[in-house]
Length: 455
Image: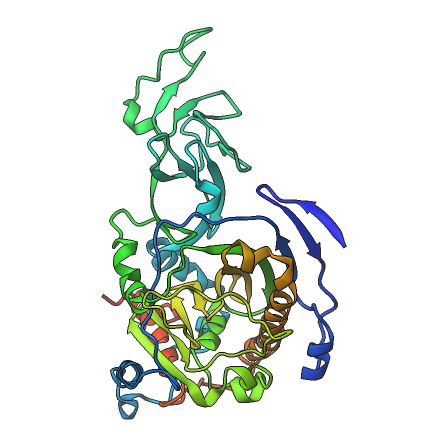
């Protein structure tokens, strides 16, 4: 066991074991496998908003069950879908296609960048890298969250390389060019001569830091490099409405896992969007979140996911983890998981929440960052619930180990000439069809003659 220093918290890390295929029994015996886990202690998450959700599924009200069915039947008629996938294999194996995704998709989408809890106070500054672009997130003295390109206007030096607190200005380490927390250039000593403090002749507003659109939702901060992006609030509104029964104001951060995939990021999203594989790959998961009670959800083109009418792990010592307070006092036994297009995955269970961010590194390489929250300080850190948290995380480790293996097998299969075209089930993989259609709309198809943007 190795103790490391995190810029924000003290963490404990266990390193990965060798990559190898193991049976479900071996997964259950081994508490850790192909990931790193960080136990974060004594953290509280300041949250400005709350979620909520209409309960439905087996064992809930008939009216709510009708809501669940209406969401499913509102999707495209399966008979209108082709069984051929919308995207060809090259969309998962071509580095050129990933370049196109960076230019046409990621650069104009809301991408996860940081955590709001690390930017809670005026003067907090956090650097981040989003798809290779260094950015800087700052809480200014008025309490406004701002994002800038993390680069000095003088010679291009990166301004901030580690998290800082109580900043009054941002000072470039190279020649001490100084900016206020609104990004305005305010001081350039010696630029106009020894001890001179005159600003350059160029208009000052053009020498300030270049601002980036930013949005804050729950504990998550997103950025968008587009000049005129659609508000993030508009993209997420239908999910907030759907989960409006949940009061998540007490969500408290607990644990981080990391998986390194030799696979394309889209295969991870597609695996997340279907439950067809659950009875075959996730046999343990199927015992407490059964395939037979799962349903596909499409709230919008950018909000799709999976729900289950029953999510009930066994109690430990007769106790369960604290559950989310519900707006109308009635507890929930369901779970729902959504893809927030393109690379952010979030799920709420009766007693915890996860947020997973995908980081595409190459056409066949993706890092998946998994973050887990529980209900209040008690749920996240109380010793009496330590066995419950451990069991919850062990369950997710097993699920993700199993997905890690099969997703990489799919990526390897994409290189085979014996596998010409992916296929999709009209009934089980409707969300994947919709996801691929959206990718094709934004990025186009691989190949020099077919990469025009579809409007």
